[in-house]
Length: 227
Ligand code: MN
Image 1 (cartoon, protein in one colour):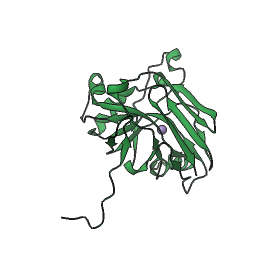
Image 2: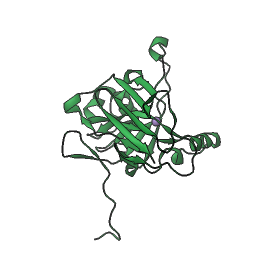
Image 3: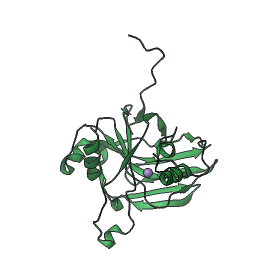
Image 4: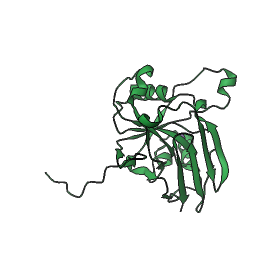
């Protein structure tokens, strides 16, 4: 057996401090997952999280250039914690979920906001808004063996040095273990899956020439130039 043309390369992400790479199977993303002042409000009335996907070949390593995508005049940055799954499973219990994590990273869920608004209004899928080429910038993955499971920490994004997003992981509505538990009810989670876990407030538009730089304390930093 041979392929009729050369097979595309396996998508992968650098593992920080090693020569190894994390092979990527799927990229899942969680929809809205931060609610400012949730703690102060004591509000536990949470609707279940929802998920969408990006293709694995949408990954863009930190230091790279993000080509401003066609068919949009309003492209937004969304800085997010990324979970890297190392062990698969179905219907994973919340209390077991952290055993399935290989490591963590920080990424950008780049979004064609105008396409998303049109899709929402028309009751159509978000595919073109979320799953376009180069829409998933990412930093190297930090293994759990090195950093554990950070449940809190500043998450921020600057554009051209100006603060746009500034929040904390502990404001996530669904934490890492809850996100994995919910996702694994819908799909069999497999090693190589990445989960972008939603963005805090402060999302906004970027333009050609902008430099997006952001990070999460204790996990890493990502820097991308818009071209
Ligand atoms: Mn997002």
